[in-house]
Length: 250
Image: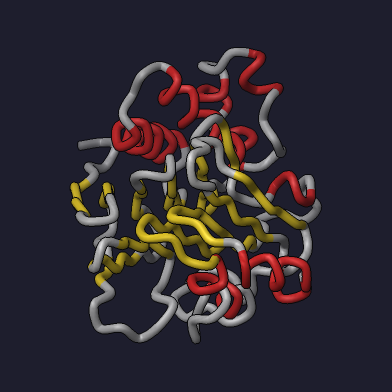
C-alpha cells in the first residue's frame, strides 16, 4: 500500500504540506494512522509540482525512503508551488523497477498515483492491457499494477474523456476483472484534483482558496472530511464534489 496527497491553491513550500505537519507524508512513511495493509511505506517516494507559467510538472522521485533523503528535505524547504501530487510507496511486491515505480507517474500536464493493490494483476488485467496499443504498453514506466492503471487512465484521457470519467470507468473495469482490488486513484493537471475512494481511506480539506485530497489527514484540523467508499472526488481550490461510484455489477 501507499499514502498520497494532492494540493491546489495558493503557492506554498512543498515542505508545508509534506514535511512540517505533525502527521504529514514524511511521518506517514513510517507511522501511518489510517493504513489497513502494511505498516511502513519505505519503498520509495515522489513529488510532482507545477511552476508558474509552465503546464508540465517537474518530478523528484527516489527508490529510498523519504526520511533518508536529505536533498529532498532541503528542496522541500524552498520550492513553492500552487499545485502538487506526492506519494510514499509501500511495494506490493519486492524489487519492482526501483525509482521508476514510485509515483507520481506523469504525461503532459498530468500527475497520477495509485494507493492500493490489484492481486495477481499480471493475469487478471490481461484483457484490459490488450485494449492498449503496443506503444502504450512499451512506454509504461514500471512493471507494476499502478503503472498499468496509469496506462489505462491515460489512454482514456488521450481519447478525450474527462478526468472523472477516465478514473471512474477504469476503476469499474479493473474491479470487474479483479474483484477485491483496492483502487484509490489520484490525478491532477495542476488546476483540479480528481480521485477515487475504492478500498482505502481518503480525506479532503478545503477552504480559504486551497484544497487538499489525501489518504489521511496530515494534522488534527476538525475541517477534514472523510470520503465515503466507492466515491469519485472532483475538486478545485474552491470546491469539492463527491459522486457515488456504482459496483461493476450494478
